Image (tube, rainbow, N blue to C red):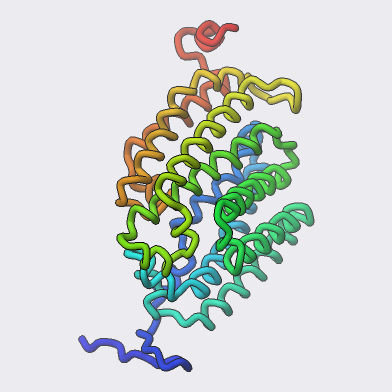
Length: 325
């Protein structure tokens, strides 16, 4: 079988003809897992058992997947030369020249236009407004804000907060302020962890500067400190969420989630440890590939279901006896 003849772009760089698989990889479907955060508020509000609310949440998830893929295409097109110096990102279709930047920008425009229309028609003005803010924020990040140390990670964390907020608006559930704080602090912790992963995978300062200039200022000691502090804040905000009773009344006894603290701490410590070994490209790789962390997430999810639906563990009143206060 003969190889495909490369094409030449306007700059004179050779490109292999893009395949359908290249376009599929370029929109990063593995990263759609990040948009699961839209389910946080509907789940906390016990609305996912309602078919209409579940449908609305799924539609919000799809809309943010489309918007996120648009920003990934733009980011990869802008960063194609820097990504070429990264051991993993250099394999992305745009970085290796399979997809031209002009094509990536055109596809991104189509995706975000469809996402906005999809959201406006099926989810309403409020969710569409949050989606538009999310896209503009991530676009600003791709074009400029990612050059600002510390602020770059905070911007990414705010993007997750907007996803969670959109999920709440999609089903008309007022989100707890502490739930929003949990999302922000946990995502900030994971964002600094991603920077630590990148630093661990790149051998030299020259390569680090080429890939992401801010990595020169993100020293290992600074990142270790930021990860430690943000991890502590994330745990504290989780605990405050479980014990706070001053705001919106939760439809389930959320104080019982306090007893899942060992699982939460293990998951955070495990994630922090994995960021330093240089085998993972970032949080998505860690979550999708590390079995102990996946097990911790499953165990915590099962625990949360038991608490939310007050499923008896031992006998008809087992849960109330175990968690009697």
